[in-house]
Length: 308
Image (cartoon, rainbow, N blue to C red; front, top):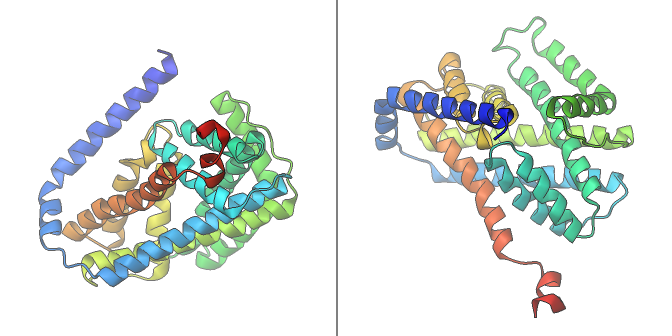
């Protein structure tokens, strides 16, 4: 067992211990929240539809990036590859998702280098645009100098610089991870389109979270749509970059609970309910499509001689 593995497992154990302590500390609030819940199901179903729409936007964004790499990939194949490989995010280290994507892409006739490279580009752009969306949506809450205007200018500048920031980020990732991810050679327009796609997905996610909160709380929510976008985006980003936490488990919940409490969007029992229910909500929407695609084999492969 390497030193890095030992450190990663120690971090995971420490995180699990902290999450256990946090849940135990607020257990009465969780019990009260679930006992008093009066859901509005049409709002919850609408939030599920928005989340699935955000997935389709991200899939098309990745597919366009693959095509800009010089490969061809149908939307159906891209959807299957994306959902199945996305299951790997629940394995510690988040490298399994990338490995699965390379294998599945090769089966679909796409170069693993193009598939993995495009995925890496989209993920890096996703982090950058997520940070920008978080700044814009939460500018007034965080009392940023210049407020929303400065945040919007910063987001525009960030998107404009992405074609040069992404190769720099890949180079930095290679040094930190000691892996050799190929530096992308894509036209600036491809990365700008990836920025538009990922930013749109963040907005859909945030609105979906607001609808979900409205449905779970029975309509007892406050704040603007921008507030809810910021509250969702910030904790999700923290969970995404926490490589030691499978699926961001623990990191996202703690950050979201604190954010809801501090902003006053949801306090006490309602905050506990939203944190717990949102994890189940997103996990189900991510895992079920991936499992279904695993069970349903592609027609071409099912009819191949090797399967006879």
